[in-house]
Amino acid sequence: WLLASAAPSLVTLDAPSSIRIINLLPVLPLFPIVVIHNLGQLSTVFAKLSTEKSKIRGKLVLTILLLFYIGRTANWLYRVWPQNDEVKFVWQAALTDTGAYLNNSPATSPVAIAGWSPGTMDPPTMRLALQRDDLDLRYFGSDSMNAPINTLILPGGSDTIRITRPNIRTFAPPLENQLVDWGAVVETHEEFTIYDLRFTNPIPQHPMSANFGGELQFLGYSIITHHASIITYWQVITPPHEPRRFFLHGLDSDGNMLSQHDSLDAPAVHWQPGDILVQFHELVGGNLAPTQLRLGVYNPDSCTPVPCQNLLVDGERPFLILPVE
Image 1: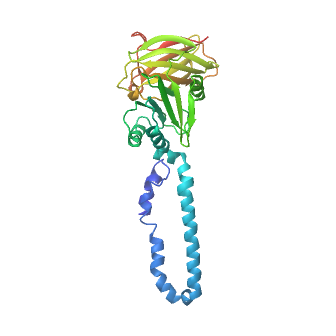
Image 2: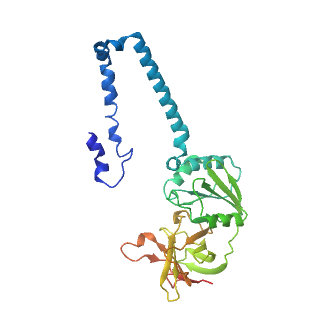
Image 3: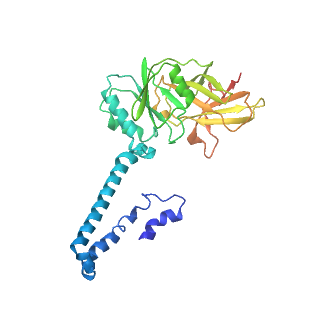
């Protein structure tokens, strides 16, 4: 039985876990059960076990052990365990507290909710936590536990908006700075942080206008540092029915790719017309500064086995070339 329960961990690359070796549980109580069953016989064979002093000592030792394990279990259960990042993720602690806060808030402005799994767990969690249906919600975030979130989604159609994120998740520093520059009022709670700001159309360093497949209007871009950190700005025209992802390539003067970045932490399923997407790109893979940038939008599900399907720019080109000044 023990060998069978451990077999999945022995023959696969996955590390042992409580889920994979849960079949051990029926066997583990067997050993203390055998001892308890034979205590009566042991007290007969070993007479000293039956003396009053031995009984008192035994009860005292067992009581001390019991109290010790109760205290240790309580500490792990109520202090150590809830602070684990993976536990907070699985139990969606921050989103649950966010829902309670929104329930008690009189504001009705749209809310963009950052999390770990905007495509799966986050929306159902908020539906359970929220006790009101008058809020217009967006969801964004990444599946990574440690990497910063590289996308912001600003709900359209309202003068004021709110953005929330769990405290154990962070926005990429340029996006955090962008929110501060826009005058966001930041309020930090035990499990989450909320940003309250007036909705304004972003003003990029390099304003541009290009239509990507009738779905997104490109508004321009800002270069942050050393031509390797760039923020692009977009507005949703028509939400697509397929996944989308941005790509940005750093090119030399001959059009050879020096560096790249592919990302989009705001699933298209949650977009609404008028929403603003703010995407941070950090070009990686090259030591030379690019002389131009190649920007595009594609469907990640279309990349196997054929080349990725890009949205056409103004109905003509599969990408847009951006100058680097």
